[in-house]
Length: 531
Image 1: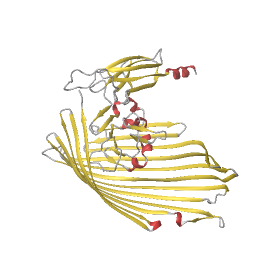
Image 2: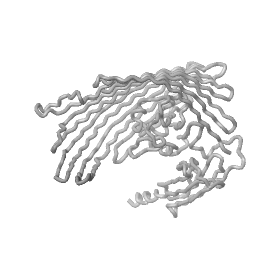
Image 3: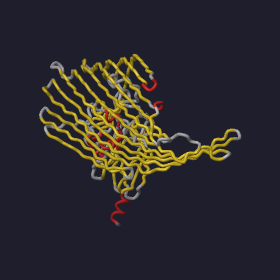
Image 4: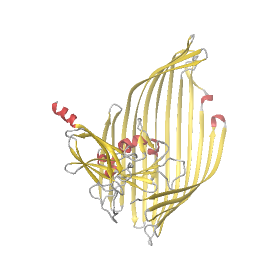
């Protein structure tokens, strides 16, 4: 027991501070901080925030060396001793600018975590030692512009409207079950994560905050490698398990990833008291209740490539995912006025559902003998996703509340086909990209409402409460973009044109809506490297 207590007490040290420019006294954001042991092994690393602040906590009481690097500044090393002072405020640490810029720098000891380009931030997952023992969701908060809220929902610059790609391609398992997949995906299986804040013209103009591109491909020389990550979350559920496998045998390459997770949110209670005063009338609304939820998720994805020869590459992708959940809640509501109770009821709600889907793609890449950097790629992808949800509501002890018990069922099905041709051609120091793309979407949602008939004690359909509609969207786009650099400046310039046809049939109300529109979206990203 004494040994366990001593071990627990030893892991409690922390230190913090602010990084700033010694000349301007301005804070330095995105500086790389590597925490090394006295024996020079990497323990942890992080980035300074936009305002320059940083912190390391949950550290053993021992001696460390903090190595700070930032582009254009001299590296700085600070000795940290937590053996006597477990809580250290380093204050403001100033970095001096480099007097001379080297033509070529080879970094061996301190590998930078973040690269900044004209249109994106690249987080090198392999340079972070925490990636060896963590899942991708646990690493997201360390990446600039990304955050995770209390419910494990990923946000990009505070926005949930973004697209997630895996190895540069969309996948239904990430679109519909993002946090479940990231929670089980080992961070060690990810090479890097790209946060594209200014999407180039190659990507669809869908009014998104940006794009997150997860790169998992790991090339091996005629061999194989794999990884496995198992974690638990108390008291919210688990275990979570995920892994990856990569194989290269001659011209054949296979990259696979899979995972499964379970969650069980403990029972939580809630209460609301609200008072409204209007002239001489006062009403008090009191509501109390509880809720709990549980669910299971699983996914599997694989990419298979075959190099026919040095100029021809054939590849295919297949991803499948599924989920199931069961939630229950109750609520007691009472609305009172000057004369007493106005309205009241007890409500019990049980919701459950399941769903999942798959997507498959085939890609053919053609190279050219004159210039192997010139590539022509043909791609086709098909995806299908289904979501079934049930909602059973029981109402008891009603007072002036006439809504009977009811059941709701909704089945949503979405299908999508994508046909795309991309062409990449370097023109001296300019890299030119062009392509065309067609997206054919078809979605259906059938929602049915049945209420309890007090005479027959049976649930009868109520057509007026049903909501049935079909939705189709066809998008045809073309793009052209150029990437080039002039001295310390880099540019990404492009133009995208899209023609969209939308038709919505509201079968429940026997009405429909048709919209056609054309958009031309320019894009421009500029980045300058300072000395």
